[in-house]
Length: 325
Ligand SMILES: Cc1cc2nc3c(=O)[nH]c(=O)nc-3n(C[C@H](O)[C@H](O)[C@H](O)COP(=O)(O)OP(=O)(O)OC[C@H]3O[C@@H](n4cnc5c(N)ncnc54)[C@H](O)[C@@H]3O)c2cc1C
Image (cartoon, rainbow, N blue to C red; front, side, top):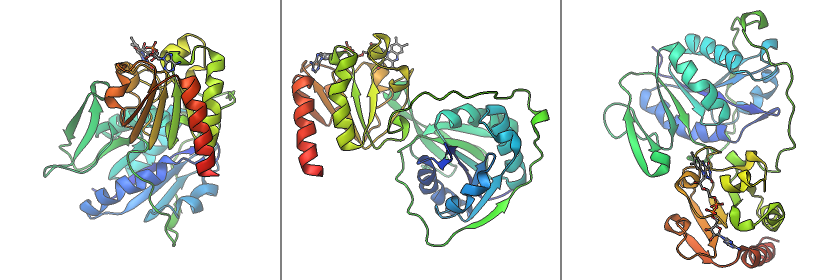
């Protein structure tokens, strides 16, 4: 039994993802309540290179598993590496509720024989046993789940916690030798073909500007792009806009798309169907621009603008340009 709390340090395109310092914020009080340490676990071929950077994120310790079989992400390979690490380190494991975290979290929990709570937005326990809050019914309600055992796995929704301040002193870094080897994996990633991504990652963005059927066509998104550029925002969309062929599916926010939780979500020409709200209702501030004053999106909006997005968005862009220049 270990009191420690371990955080999976997610790496993407040779960089530590923004969700990691948020997990440090979420994990620190859990580690303190257990009287344990907070540890970062890096996985991947060449992960040693990023260990010094991880060591300054606010962890007490950092370990890395560096193996040739982890050159490309695979759920089997990464899960095996983390399970191997956790069998040695023990304790609690936190992962981001990112596509990778969602992919490997449940399998790791099952292999370690631990309970798991996914998509957690609040880790403050309400009773004697650890309990965690998560949205359910497409964000219409929250439930609190109590864990009966000492150790568990959590996936934490991105942007639910602020990023921890980097620490002045670096944590101790250690290599973990976990026997892996490509021959043990039943699947091998042969090739990854990357699509040209947007400038800002949607799931980690602090500001998201999204368009729906109100943009009228693919070129309608060109009205939103300058606003994204001025605000440093990621571009999102409703599913209807995706199905209509206005924009690539990777931009879709919602129940069957991406879950976002930015500081600011600007919904342009989106009616606010429950399936769309499921992916964005935990945004800290929601601004809705819609010609229909009765659009359901206004029910959850902090600020509503009843108007034509083709007039409102360029006007907003100009004002933000002046304010932010
Ligand atoms: C199983 C399932 C899963 C789904 N998953 C998702 C999902 O993940 N994400 C998602 O988004 N949807 C999802 N949907 C679809 C969802 O139910 C809605 O159909 C969709 O969200 C509607 O998209 P929209 O708001 O862009 O379009 P609409 O509902 O057609 O709304 C368009 C809005 O634009 C406004 N508008 C029109 N012109 C202008 C203008 N010039 N300026 C300003 N406003 C204007 C209109 O007043 C209207 O409110 C799912 C549905 C199902 C059944």
